[in-house]
Image 1 (cartoon, rainbow, N blue to C red):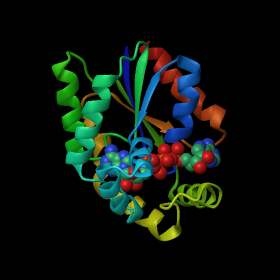
Image 2 (cartoon, rainbow, N blue to C red; image 1 turned 180 degrees about the vertical axis):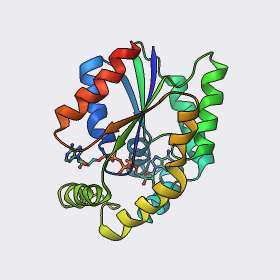
Image 3 (tube, rainbow, N blue to C red; image 1 turned 30 degrees about the horizontal axis):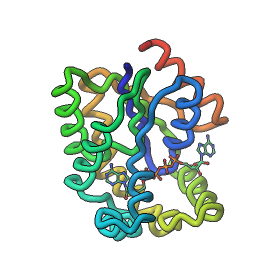
Image 4 (spheres, rainbow, N blue to C red; image 1 turned 120 degrees about the vertical axis):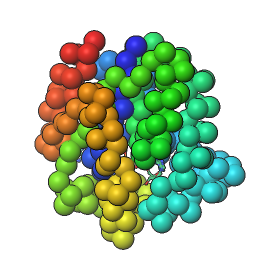
Length: 190
Ligand code: B4P
């Protein structure tokens, strides 16, 4: 059972590569972004509270996210592996995840860090915004999300590098080529 984290800036291809890895390896997948958007759609209290942060390009507070992920992790029983996508997004979330896994005698086995140049990230998200109408895919919010990523999320790479589980992956180019780079890391772990 592999505990994977797919990591990277907004637009780096986390969701895109997760879909391929689910198909290719039969992994289970949890995306905090998808969970939050589902809560917003349902109009739940969590969704109402999350919407204001997401629309402003800010992170949803750790306490809400950690509570939500604990609940979902309890419900899932992945067999081959689990991909966490969009979580952890702060060092506090990474520490909470490490503690949760340690309680179950396990740990994060690999952090797959998709690295893409900033101008390409912006172009990808603007294109998605045109197609999907996602409220946070407009230039102003994208720029805020990138600033938040550098300030609050990027330090997680160092947190996991110290544990020897961080893998930098070139995230530009054809989707299949990026998957092949990830698969190389995953196959070495398997
Ligand atoms: P997310 O849904 O995680 O949004 P994201 O960072 O933009 O990543 P996403 O997975 O959607 O995009 P991808 O990289 O696949 O989070 C949304 C918001 O929710 C956050 O801003 C935050 O407010 C909140 N949130 C979520 N998790 C949280 C947490 N843990 N703590 C606090 N708040 C949290 O990029 C995809 C785009 O690029 C696609 O359009 C795709 O078609 C394109 N693409 C992918 N690969 C490509 C390639 N190789 N070439 C060209 N285009 C490519």
